[in-house]
Image 1 (cartoon, helix red, strand yellow):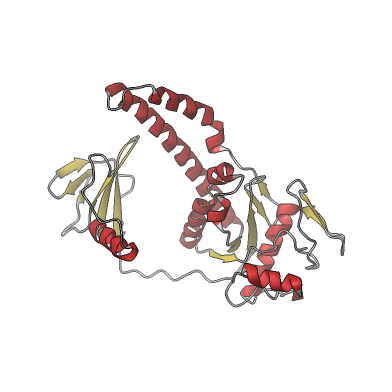
Image 2 (cartoon, helix red, strand yellow; image 1 turned 90 degrees about the horizontal axis):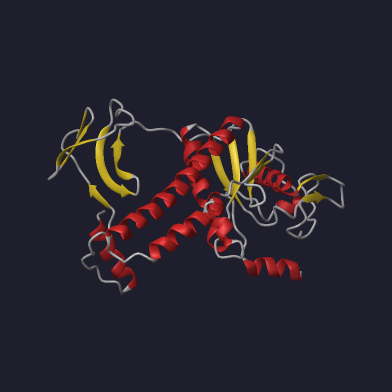
Length: 314
């Protein structure tokens, strides 16, 4: 579906926002949706109406694949060609078998696993915030549209791209590290939109939880690792050893200590262990505790706020 079709469908759905001609420089990409033959020859890319363009080919196109679409993207560091290829080969979905692992995402530690591993959270944006503020101040003092204004704008864009690439590289490294440890990975089905609007919204967006979960899902699929999300309710308030709800903890309380069985561990590690138990119970590979019956089913489900209030009142 082209951009014009998407714009009209969006207009018909919302009844406003009629498509109009865009200004110069508003789009940073262009799509070439179909090709009669392979446009990649050596280190050249042949585009309709443009001709052959020299490219730095990162990897050759595998045998049996056909080029379906090419997208030319302009970034601060240069021009990039995103080539979509297609093949008739069907890859089966990974099956839940083997060693399992539960993970808990947070701001104190980026990831805590059910194997008691803690991965620190690099502060990509916060560390470069002072430099970004300085560049944006210099940009605001330039005359808009001038050559110096364009130079200052490119410096700001390159810094943003550097932050994005550094964060993405870290996410891929962590995703591969997790896939090295287990064949089944469970994570919380977080409400990322609500988290990005809270008091710690800047740090939450800097961590990039949503992007990491998408990368983890993609890496797990490529490496034949089963990935699933579970209900996040009360994961930090449930004891993984006996299943008793210990109550809400303050953010400053970083240790889980059960008053019923005396089990003591890191707060985030305990939540990761609960996530793993819920995932295994939903797949029929683990024991389902009585207190967890409302959070576990054939498919991980969410409980509404009204139902939680009714349970508390009862």
